[in-house]
Amino acid sequence: MTSLDAVLAQYEQSKSPDYGQKGMSQEERMKKYFTLLLDDKSNSGQRRVRILPTPDGSSPFKEAWYHEVQVGGKWQKFYDPGKNDNERSPLNEVYEELMSTGKESDKELAKQYKSRKFYIVKVIDRDREEDGIKFWRFKHNYKQDGILDKIIPIWRNKGDVTDAEKGRDLIIELTKQKLPKELLIPQYPLLCTTTQVLFIKMIKSKRIG
Image 1 (cartoon, helix red, strand yellow):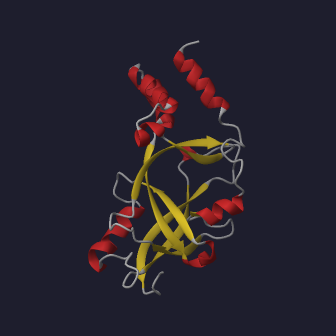
Image 2: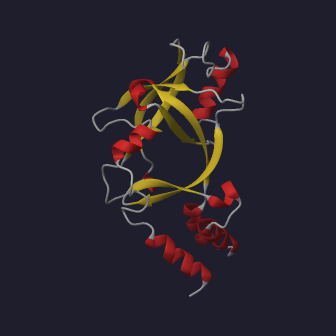
Image 3: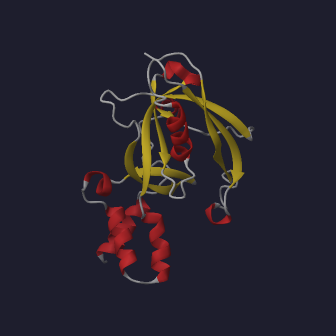
């Protein structure tokens, strides 16, 4: 067995439905993370959120890299120790080995092992303020049509929306859209749609703190 075979076998073994889910219930995850999911009966909706300022005045959007892997029919995110901490990353090693063969089939397979850049920001979920500070994690969009790309124009036009006294909440308008055929999972027909952010606007709100 080669090193590549060993790493691939280890990866497949890790894809059990319970992998990475022990120790935290769905309710606990909802209290910790701010999400843009719509329930099964809703085709559109809104979320209201307040981005919190940083103590040192730096950008509240912290960059981090994650692998996205299908586990039990659901997409899970796995921290990339290679790009984040400059440490050994088995999934990155698989990606690099597959890319190095020069085969188009291996390049296509390598896509599922490539990590992606995300932003993480601390927020207050205005619909569930009792949960306290949450983490909002969203993907970087290289086509400049992502969440951050929709927030930045507000920053440019209205100033720092995180300011405790003069800042504002953000209203996020959501809708459901069908997934592309290549992302559909036949054995999980309910997972045929994804939530799309239509636009983000600013609204007057109470101060924080």
